[in-house]
Amino acid sequence: MTRLTPHPDRLFPADPAERDIARRLYAEVASAPIYSPHGHVEASMLVANESFADPASLLITPDHYVTRLLHAVGVPLDELGLRRDGAEPTASGRSIWRQLCAHWDVFLGTPVRYWFESELSEVFGLTEHPSAANADELYDELVEKLASDAFRPRALFDRFGIAVLATTDDPADDLAAHRTLADDPTFTGRVLPTFRADRYMLPAESTWPARLDALSATSGFDCGTYAGLLDALRSRRAVFAAAGGTSTDTGVIDAGSEPLEPADAERLHRAGLDGSITEADAVAYRRNMLYQLAAMASEDGLVMQLHPGVLRNHHRPTLDTFGPDTGHDLPDATSFTRPLAPILRDFGTNPTFRMVLFTVDETTFSREIAPLAGFYPSVYAGAPWWFLDTPAGIARYRAAITDSAGFVKTSGFIDDTRAFCSIPARHDMSRRSDAAFLASLVATHQLSEDDAAGVARRLVADIPVDTFRLG
Image (cartoon, rainbow, N blue to C red; front, side, top):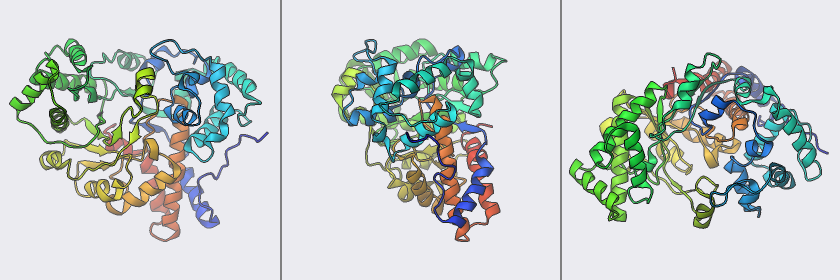
C-alpha cells in the first residue's frame, strides 16, 4: 500500500538552485493566516458547531470538483449523496466513501487529488492512500476522528489559521448567523457576508417574482417596481456592510453593462412580472442591473467581484433532477474591455469604486484583465479560480498578469469552496505555486530574493486585505 505522505518539495522547481530559493520563499508564508474573501461555506455551520455527520457529507457530496469527475466516469450523482428531486439522499455515507476510494486513480494529476492528499494526511492524519481494499477501514478511522471535539467546525477554523472567511449570501438573507458569530465572545474569527444579487437581475426566470416578494418582505421596499427593487438592494447592501461585509459577488453570462433610462427599465420590470418580457429585453434589463450595481458600489464602497462567462446548468436533465450547483456549470468565451466600457467610463477612476475581475476563460488574462488592471485604479485581476485554480493555472496566470499589472493589482488567492476542510490545502497550493514563480524570477535575476520574499508575504496578507478592504 502506497504511503500517503505529500512530498515537502511538491510544486517546487526541479532545478536544485531554484528549488532552494522556492523553499526559502515558501517558508516565509507557510504558516501565515488564511484570508478567504470569496467562498461558499455556510456561517450557520460555525454557529451550530456540531460534529460533522460523516466523511462523505463533509469531503465529497458538497464539493462539485469531486462529484463532477466521478460522474464523468459513470458514477450516478445520487450515489454520491446528491438529492434526487428534493427527496432525502438514498446513498449512505459509507457507500459514497467507497465510490471515492474505488475511483481514487481518476483524480491522478488533478488539483482534487492534490487537495485530498493534503487534507487526508495533514488534517486527518491518514497514512494510506484510499483504495477499494481499505475504504471501510479509512471510513471508520475518519468517523472516529470526526466524533471528537478537535474536529468540530470551530476547532478546525482555529486550527486552519483562518483570519477572515467570507460567505456568499442572498440579499434577502437575514444574516442572523453572522450576527450570532459576531456577538459570541467565544468565537474570535471573522466571518463576513458577501452580497450576491444575481437572481434579481433575471426577469425572464420563473422564480424571479417570488424572489422579488421575498426581498420586499425583508427590505420593506416594494420590489414590484424597478425603483423599489433598486431601493431594496441599496438598503440590503447597507445591512450587509453593517454586518461586516466588504464585498459583493456577481456572476453573469456576459459583462455587458449598458444602462437604461429609468422609464425603460421600469417598463421591462413590469414585463418581467407579467411574463411578457422578450429574451432581448431580459438581456437589456440584466446589463442595466449590472451597471446599477456598479453605481451602488461607487457610492457605498463594497468591492464588486464580477465573474462572467459561465454557462450555468448546462445539462438540463441534471438540473431538473438534482438542482443547480451540481457540477455542470461550464466555461464560455468571455470579454471584458468592450462590455465594461460604460461602467469604467463612469466609475473607473472613482476612488470609492473597486472591481475584481474573475474569469474561466484564461485567454482574457493577458489580453483584457491585466491591461484593464494596469490602467484603471478601480480594477483588480482576480486569482485563477474554478477550472483554473490549479498549479499549472496559477503559473499561467502569474506569467500572463504580471507583465501588465504586477502583483499589487491582483486579489490574492481565492479558494471559492464549499468544502471546508479543503481550504488550507488550497491556500497552501497557491503559496507553493507562487513561491515557485517568484523563485524563477530570482534565478533569472529579475527580482532580488529579498524583494521576492516581500512579494510572497504581501500576496497572502496585505494584498487580499487591501483589495477586499478587509482592514
